[in-house]
Length: 425
Image (tube, rainbow, N blue to C red; front, side, top):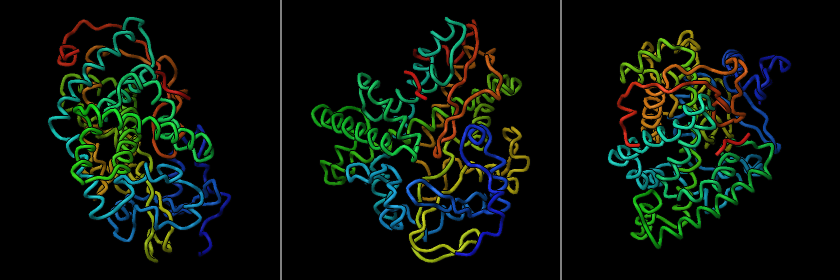
């Protein structure tokens, strides 16, 4: 491995509250000095981290990179990284960990849960949940749009889609938060959380075998009965859907709400014109990408990428957030300019592994924000913006809290006329 062409002492810190709040300076340094950076990780392992837009897009389409953990170098496998961390067979056999025909088969198995009919039902349900969650906030005149709104909306929605009953929500939230945060410095908590979710999902699957419903697990079990899926693939797909399916939506709703509160002229345009809200959401997806880094990829043969020689088995992370803030593609990347940027963002990835829930996340964010700003158009932050805390995760980028004050608004609108937990530290 060649010596680094930069001063190691100049490498920016890539963890902690300052980085979580504003990672752009670190990513700018990496793009300029080490576009393929060898990032040390806990457990005596490391990964290449790619930060340039062109390199990230190229890597997502490169057949020499695989999502299969079985091809990873021994040092990575011994560190127990990935999803789930301990690679148990009941939870690892999901679409994010396979390629080719196997990936297509597992992706197809979920198609019904994200089809137009199910999405329309989820849109109506999102309006209903948003109204229910807003009522106590508006009654009090204040609340936290993460703790009291985005998080309960996101977790309840994905649990309903998967088939997890509302009675189990309090059991789902704590371990789901731990796994979604992906803190590899606390593997004991990660493994305990995985144990808890594994047991909970096994219980739900058993219930759905006896009493199927209109949900993802019931769809998967029907395909298992037809010989198209295994028992482990049913459990693993439900696990992936739970973890990946709520944090992105939560982060997108909260980040967009913050952006509109701090850009009132854009909020007014979005409230008057639903098509402008769509543009706002797309620009937030670019500027404050909810999925900070992609899940793992592994080199399958010696190759060069981003100017760096890589060997078979080398792990790679692709920074979607850094790519979406690359000034070579998006000039003045921190400026908020909905509808003005010609190049599409990569917030949901590209290629065969593009996020299967992208349409659901966009739809839920749109429905939740329509309701929120129709009923509470004059929200204000109750703390300075620079005192807001961002979630300390290597996987997601989202606000930990968003305290606001507001009051009821008497104007009726589409969201108001629609059918009508706490996020841990």
